[in-house]
Length: 303
Ligand SMILES: [Zn+2]
Image (tube, rainbow, N blue to C red):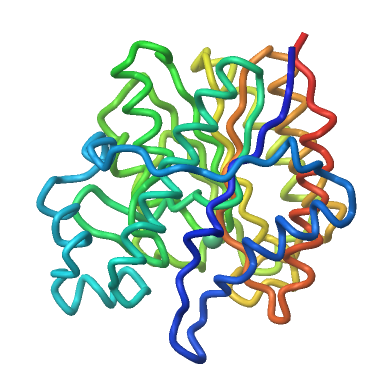
C-alpha cells in the first residue's frame, strides 16, 4: 500500500539579499536533480497549494501570525528568525507548513510522504529562530490530533541542531514524543528539553553515532507506542556541512536514514519525512546526501 508522494514549495521561493547565509536555491536544485537522476518521476512530485492560514494557529499565537503576515515583527524578532521579513516570506513559510500537513495526510493513507521544505524546528509559538518562521511539524501534529486522525506521534529529529521550538511546544504533551540527536556545541546554545536528547561532541563519526541510534531509537519507540513517525532528516550532520559540527560520512548519513526506515517498516508505522537543514558550501555534498535519502524512501514499504 506504500506510495511515496513528495510535496514541494519552491514555486514560492524568496529572493534573499546578496551574501545571505541561507542557500534558498537548494530546494529547487534538489527537486530538479531528483527528476534528472530518475530518483523521482513527475508523478511522485506535487506542488503544494496554500491552505487557509488558520492552520497556523495550531502551533502559533494569533499575534505572532499577524506580525509575520503584515511585516510588523520587531527588529530583534526579525533578526532572530534569520530572514528579512516580507509578504513573500510569509507565503513561503505558510506553504512549507501546508506541505507538511498534506504530507501527513498522504502518509496516513499510503504509508510514506515527504516534503522538499520544512523541518523548521527552531520556531516557537510566538517567535521564529534560526531560519525557521513557523514550526511545520508542530502545526501538523496538533492539527491531526485535533482531527482525531493521530493520537501518539513520535518526532525523530536527527538534524544536527536541536529542535528547541518543537521540544518547547510539546514539553507538556505526554502523547507526543520528541527524540533529538544533535551536536552539543551547535546552535541553539541554550537547549530545550526533549523527551530524549543526546548531544554529540564535535567531530563525532559514523560508528559512535549509529551505535547510539541503534541503541536508543528503537527503545524509545517501543516505550511510546506511536501511531505515526515524523522524521526531520536534516543532512547537516555530514562532515562537509558548514554549520554542523559532526563528521558523518555519506554512507553514515545514509545508514542513519536506513535505520529510521527499517524501524518504521518493522513497527508498521506511517512516516512523514521533512527536510531540515543542509549547508555545505558549495551545496553539492548536501544535495548528494539528500538524493541518497530520497532513494531510500523510494524503497520504503509498509505491508
Ligand atoms: Zn539544522
